[in-house]
Figure 1 (tube, one colour):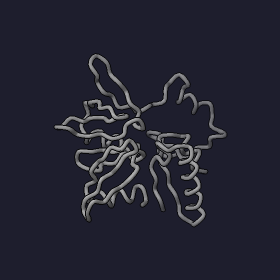
Figure 2 (spheres, helix red, strand yellow):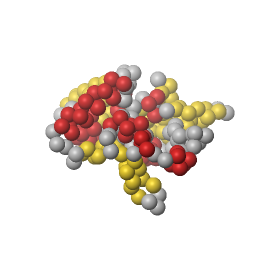
Figure 3 (tube, rainbow, N blue to C red):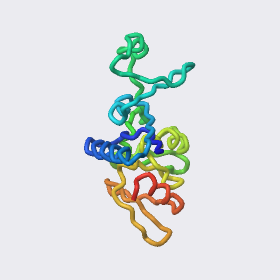
Length: 190
């Protein structure tokens, strides 16, 4: 059995197609795959049977083709879908970033710095808070002072048997703790 959380988050269209092909191959070889996601669209793309969790009712089978209008009353078109953004205070304004815009986050003297396209923005959240929120969105704590967007990793360089550096697409270099190498290998399968 394979359990996957938010499988298509931060993937490109080509990445989604590749992922769906790998998922079909896995299922053809008798592996049971259980997917969880906040996005119904992800589940529709990746699954044939969908269960929805409702408070005080538990899990219930969802038939999207025959859902009653009473169910759609719960998700009114006027109610916006929750969107996750990271905020940064810059002078007299607040700037919001989508997780996929962030290359990496660095802790500098206990202050979290968001690195977005070569610019740095301060976050009021701690690294631990950011790690907790962003892990399910494709981020990885590669070092005690760094949280990296896995989609931004371009290279892994081994300088010695126990010293590793991640090179990002924007050419930034981040240290990879030797204890984190195994976790990274499990996440991106190399």
